[in-house]
Image 1 (cartoon, rainbow, N blue to C red):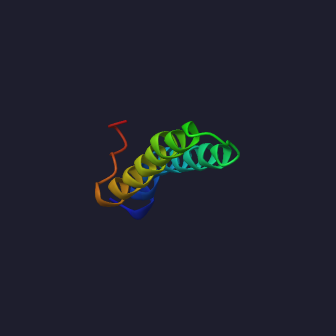
Image 2: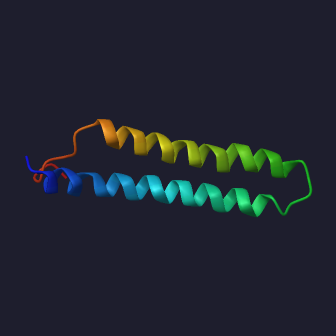
Amino acid sequence: MTMDVQITGMVPRLRIAGGLIILGLLIEAFTLTWNNPVAFVVFLGIGGVLIGLGVLIYLISLVTPPARWGEH
């Protein structure tokens, strides 16, 4: 297996991880403008979970072997 095949297999997982992290950061930035107790719940409950999932998917994509060409 060449390096190009390995990198190509990681790209979809890295895009999902990046998308989750960006979405979590946008939610957290949006809740910083709120001035009520629900903002903290949304900040950590939704934004924090999305960022955590993005980081977890990123780390898993680094240690697991990528899918082969015929196994999409």
